[in-house]
Amino acid sequence: MLASELMEKVRRIEIRSRRIVQNRTAGAWHASFKGRGIEFAEIREYQEGDEMRSIDWNVSARLGSPFIKLFTEEREQNVFFLVDRSASGQFGSGSTTKDEFSAEVAAVLAFSATLNKDKVGLLLYSDQEELQLDPARGHHHVLRIIRELLAFEPKSPHTNLAGGIEHLLKTTLKRSIVFILSDLITPEFAKPLRALARKHEVILLHISDPIERELPDIAALSISDLETGQVTRLTRKEAQTLSERTSSAAEEIASSCRRAGIDYVPLDTATDYLPAIIALFQRRISRR
Image (cartoon, rainbow, N blue to C red; front, side):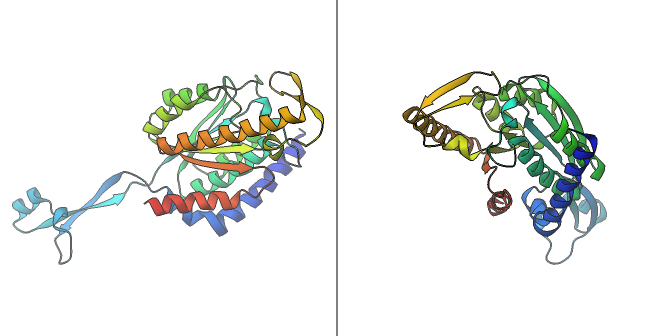
C-alpha cells in the first residue's frame, strides 16, 4: 500500500470513528466498562444520611465523633486488542475485507476507550506474535494502532488463536478489557479462552463475510484456502453441508462464551457494525 493511500485510509477511518464515538459510544463506554477498583479519597465527619458502614471506627474513636472514609472509582483501565492477522482476513466478497472491517471496528472502540482516559494496547497474531504495542493513552497512539491494523504485513499466513490468547495470559498481568477480533477460522481455542476470561474481561468479536456462511447455489465451485493455498472443488450438496457446519460452529462458540461469561458479538462485513456494538454496551449496562 502506498504511503499516501495508507494515510488517506487512516484519515477516513479516524473521521468516521471519532464522529461515531462523539455521537453514540462515548457515554456508553464509560457506563459499560467502569473501573472495578476503588481508591481512598478522604476522611470527613459523619453527616446525616451517610451510610453507617462507611464509618471509620478507629478514626472516630481517636477524634471522639464519627468520621467516614470516602472513596473514588479507580478509572484507569487497560484495553487490549488481540487481532487475528492470518491470511484469511484478506478475504472480502464485497468492497471491504475482513482485515479492513476489523480495523474500523477496533478504531471506534479504541477512540471510545482513549476518550475515557483508558490505556489501549494491541497484539497482532497469526500462528506467532506479529506485533505487540503496550497499552498507552492518547489520540496519536490510536492512530498508530489503526495504521498497523491496515498496513502491517504478517510473517506467517497461518492461524493459531489459542497461541495468541496464551501469549496475552503470560504477558498481560494487570486485569484488562480484552477485545478479540477474528474470523475464528482457527484450531481449537476454547480452553485458553476460558482461562483468559477468568483473569480479564473478554469480548469476542467474530468477523465473518456473508459468503462464508452461504456459498453460491451453483452446480459446483472451487474455493481456495488463503492460509494454505489449497484449492477444493465442491458440489452443491457439499457447499450446503459446509454452510451448515459453519453455522453450527458459530452457535457452539456463542454457547461456550455464554458459559464462560464472555461477550460474544457476531459481525458481518456486509452489515453496519454499530448496532451490534451499541447492543453490546446496552447488555453490559443492564447487567450492572
